Amino acid sequence: MNEINIAVIPVAGMGTRLLPATKSQPKEMLPVGRKPVVQYVVEELNRVGVNRLLFITGSGKHSIENHFDLVPELTQSLREDGKEDLLAELSFIRAPMQYFYTRQRQLLGLGHAVLCAETFVGRQPFVVALGDSIIGLNAKSRIVERMKKCFTENKADAVIAFEEVPPEDVFKYGIASPKSSGDQFEIEDLVEKPGVGESPSNLAIAARYILSPDIFDALKKTKPGVGDEIQLTDAIRMLLKDGGRVFGVKLNGSEQRYDIGNFGSYFKAFAEFALADEKFGDELRTHLKSIL
Ligand code: UTP
Image 1 (cartoon, rainbow, N blue to C red):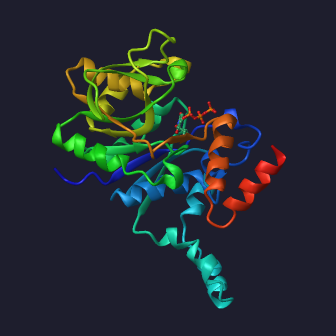
Image 2 (image 1 turned 90 degrees about the vertical axis):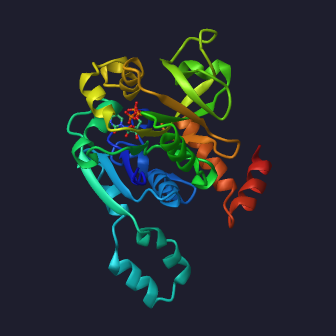
């Protein structure tokens, strides 16, 4: 099988839980420490050899395209002024990545956003990486590499990243019903937002997927579910019902998921990344101690 090197990055959502910050800028462009969220996602994928990226965008999301463009005037001016340190901050735009963009013309949910990638992806497996979630401090995660291996070795139909969440939080997530324990496991079923005490596990879907192209047929048959949206989880369940094999790979201890979708988790992510900053982290730590 060819190397899996395409990722679909859905970034079309309205980010309403982050209003007013997201009124005129995409939540995926909010900074966490020094970089916008979506740059971490791209850097994570680049490190594991996924270098053809299709962003599913929507209106008001142009700044994402601009962010990954070359800017000759800016680089030339920094070079002329001898600002090599600042030039280094722009090195990500020269990474050997190919960027593609298409619009989700109606916001019908994550599953529908993925379906918008069908023509581009064709009949090959691909990664889905949510544009509002960073995996690991400074995105130093190789989860997608482990997922690719799992997908290929098991001839899977889908592989999903999972994180262990506190049992009292399971009601917020899609949860795995695993067939076995361990860092990698086959999945019996997925349960959307189970009640506390009714959950088959505490393994929550964590923003990274590898999917076979059969998902597109499943998505076309998937009816709107929770929130009246076409849910990717429902389409994966359809693959399972049709006899497909779906696996889970667990995030390890250094691969915490930073979800930027609400202010609570956004503030925590920003604080952690800022505290880990090489130049300003110590100063910030001292300041926080003095005001707490
Ligand atoms: P979310 O459901 O967390 O994003 O989707 P949202 O819809 O922007 O959130 P709220 O509820 O309004 O605050 C997770 C990811 O999927 C994308 C989002 O951009 C986000 O990166 N998404 C979601 C789409 O691309 N299209 C959709 O129809 C829904």
